[in-house]
Image (cartoon, rainbow, N blue to C red; front, side, top):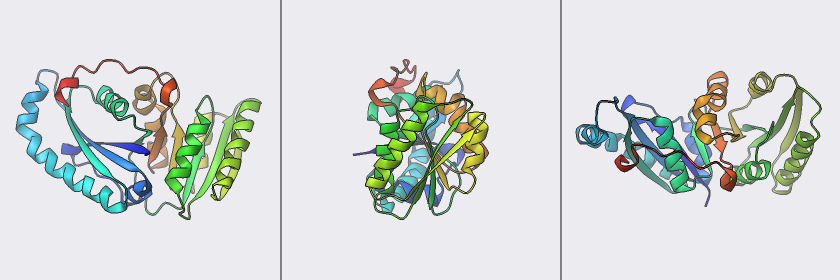
Length: 242
């Protein structure tokens, strides 16, 4: 079953927009509530102090996902390093994608960029499962600053796969800086599904691109992991505190 990890700074009051909850109703969801503790504070000490309050908030969010249709579970971690904890738990769960929150209403249009070295087949398979039999249109997008035959081929192959699955799909091409072109293309779309790129999920999610896309486009971003080709995660120093 396809699984999406949804990280939340649970004690900071972060929530998930109704549109994202509904969009993820076709997949299984693990809500990861995390709380970053100061370096000098042992995670177990923070857990003793805040665990009940965190679990109460986490239960509320998890129940919302379960009501949307998919199986929902939760994990709670007190950590010194948010990025390492998210990457470790995504790996433990073999999660297919990780969500970067964003505000959205009902999702009617998805933007799916295939620019660069992404696992286009995994992204396409994820989109087919995510959309299911719902009336959600998909725009496949490639941005290049040079001739990119591989990108064109990936775009055409992905479009054929989505049409075969009964999904309404358009293709769009842009010439120019990939990030700026992607942000421009996101206008008029309710959410973005994009593939993870090297060197790691952590660097992609938090280092730059996915969070920048979410910030610039406002809506949520789902990052599809590279699967077996993904680099092995670094050791999480708070692993025992999860």
